Image 1: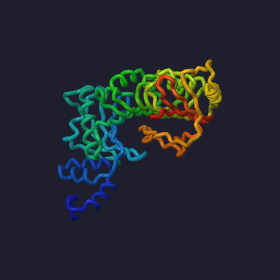
Image 2: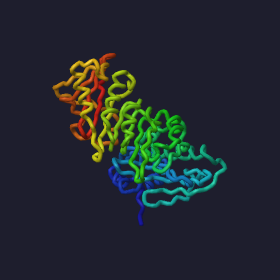
Image 3: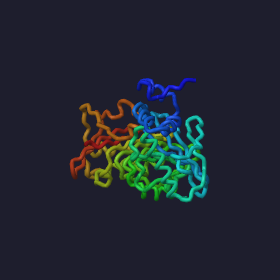
Image 4: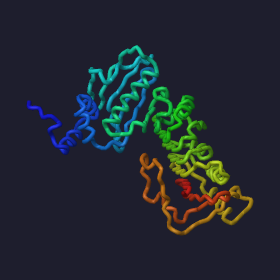
Length: 354
């Protein structure tokens, strides 16, 4: 069969060829020559994220993946023995197996073993995949679907972390958040198993937090969150804790807070009237009100809150989510900072205006 070099084809054809290749095939092709790698980088499709997923407990598996919209495809997978004897240098290892979307690198022993070598291999291949798909390697996204192996990554390198709600009570989180102070997004997915809802708040200082299965943790985060943006789903909201949030914010004790969006579980009632009573009472200038450090107003003009959180990359909001006309406004007496409250039996939203 006659072979046609990719370099001889027009860019529009190369783009179509790359579309039908698996991510693993693209990776392996990029390693054949510098010219091929440049051609791929010039014509590759847009990728939203390149990340690393760590799975396993006894045997650790590190999968470098790409994300396009909601679709995730593994590019290459590294396997580690229980004693962390790591793979040979993946750039010179010729024993690749291509299985669907995974370029598999087999296990093998090296002289330099342990976490240091494992971290080096993971970051090396992640950086290379980022380069091929034109993604900034410093925006490292990691996923821990089974166990938080925080030692797989160098200190201060993780920007986004995804885990299941089962892991929120894991003591390893203390070390993870202590080492990864540059993390700006934590996404906690709903697990398939039975979840014990505790009151641990190791993650309260992460700037942006998404809890897919917040339940009673919603009330913990409402009163302890020291980040900027929160999105809580499947909440067991309680009017008492919402009022505590308002009081803490009014007293400058949650001064980093920019937005909090909490959606109530369909299986639990939310006593939101308890919050409305406090707001209406304060609007009547009651001095005995717990919000005496605030001024409450109800504006009638149409306003759209300028929501700019990275949460929009992870969650699709309803079109009217940020419409603030007819909502309650609270104005802090100490500095005049204004926030809007949207509340119903189905949700609680708090937006601080710039």
